[in-house]
Image (cartoon, rainbow, N blue to C red; front, side, top):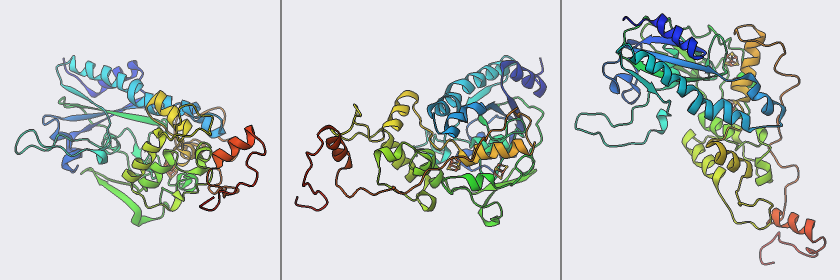
Length: 375
Ligand code: SF4
Ligand code: SF4
């Protein structure tokens, strides 16, 4: 029996997939070799992007500044690693029931690909990872917004994506134009606590993608600053960092660290341990909350996409550029930000020791001065 795009869309709806888009493989011919789908599935004819929404309510705790790990759990890690992949798998099974091969693709991070040797002379290294957003934009399921976050007509920026590659030749959906959803309002730029998104009028700071039949563009986001902020190294959005580093005032907004450097700082820091008898933290984790979430969920998202998703969805809801709107507006008051610099810098060598002793043995530090060496 013939398999059509409409049959795949109907099945996706039955499965509970929120939206899909279908693109023909020729649209991705300009992709670099290590991101090119043809180099991983030579007979591929069509690409399907699978889209699942992030519940708006999963941002509530972070927006109020009162609860964090719901977002990491439901909107990031488990949505990307359990909830959406299960449906991508089901849709792949449906396609293969018609005799067409279907490759469900787990979205990796192309720029973190390790280098490995090819399996045979003339072959490429076994590290081909297509870019999920660039491929999805070529299926017409949405556009890459100015913030580099993917936008969909129903859910705006509240979504996660998956891909299926197939040798079935399917009717493609049209590619959206830049600006079909993104209004270039600049809300993401203004509200990004990492100063990671360039001004909308900065024409020199755009990335252009050529799909053959259409070119699109988006802002050249500073991924080092975003990664530092997203992974909790920015005091402005983390109530947790100051507890561990009360005197740190790292200027993320002007950092020039690359994305990889930021990962190398943030991840080891999140799980690091340091022997310290003066805290009330039984496992000696350096950044207690990050370690806790990493152990529970295997990931930690601290910024909660303050600019690129929260401010963006509010803008798109208010301007009625997206379909999934709500009875109540998202913001009830201005979104909070914390100061970066410490209120009063500690001059002691070990503030954790001092607090511990002052609390448990008042007066025992009389005449102590650990400010200078030799005492
Ligand atoms: S907030 Fe959203 S709609 Fe506005 S410029 Fe940024 S990505 Fe585009
Ligand atoms: S995740 Fe946070 S730091 Fe990164 S672009 Fe979005 S708002 Fe900016």
